[in-house]
Length: 419
Image (cartoon, rainbow, N blue to C red; front, top):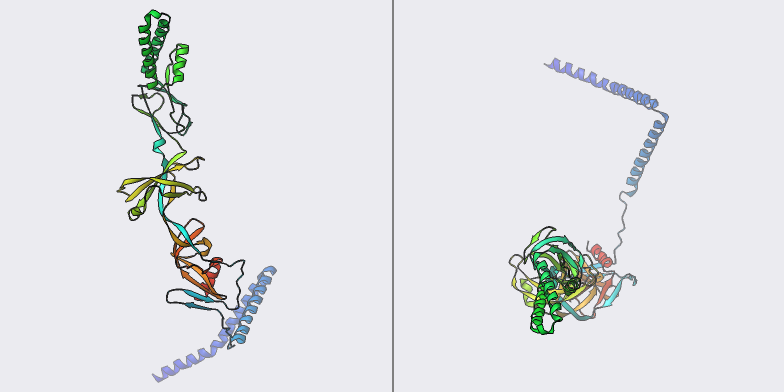
């Protein structure tokens, strides 16, 4: 057993003695192979490879030198003169000794309280004014021969909308012509005065029948002048406006009372706003409503509430409040969504420009100046008056110097000191 172990150890020793020679031979072989591969490369490639090796060598040398130079080097930390204090109420106080803020960028204004309207947000939509809309219905049975004004067409009072062939209308015209001729004959014979009066009554009744069917006085005079009946009854518009909806097509038959078209005035609209249950006690007729639309964000439309619904909509759980909206320029469109602000009262508040308000998530902050180098930031409560002003109801007192321009920039300093 001892001999076997001795033999194994001798073999291991011999192998270990040969390892350096083998390693050296392997390195020389690999080195020769690298040399052959390198010189086999094109000259341009060899130049790029040499450049890469030189760059890596310089980089490694710089790292080594940097480690030797910077290790254990004392670092001087300069104490900042800036300090931030956070009070238990959340108010932050920042001191900037020796630093003067640029007055062209940072503008402070003295807070002053004033009366501002208390407004209630009221989403809603625009619609045609139903009081100034008209439905044209058939006054006589007949067939629709021609459509003159299609959907969206502008119409004026008396302008034709469509034409109908109606036997009742033709019969009324013939009756009028007959009574008109009889009256002319009897006018030449004074002995038949009683018959003349009856004939005139019959003529007036025939004329009224024609009017009831939808014809105008001009058509009656033309009928009397020409003595010829008009084949089609022209249905005319009773208002200035547009054709909102057409209910018949050419060739369709309409009975008495059938709807032919719906007309409306686009210059007279309604705003239907939704007021939720918790705000019902604040509303009443006559209150001013300020309307804004996404189509014209810089334009304001003013109206007054003239109707409050007697019941709550069971689907939206909201009460509908209505106002008349004048639209002389035709900018607004029915079914357009609008945002209304209902003025339900007034209160005392400090009015600041929107640039003075710092918004962080759902919170609103302002920054005031308490000393030449001391500033405070604290939360406030209030509401937007319009797109340019903010009414602060809690947090700012009269006389405070509020930062109105540059608040966002100075707030960044608060944030950096807080970190």
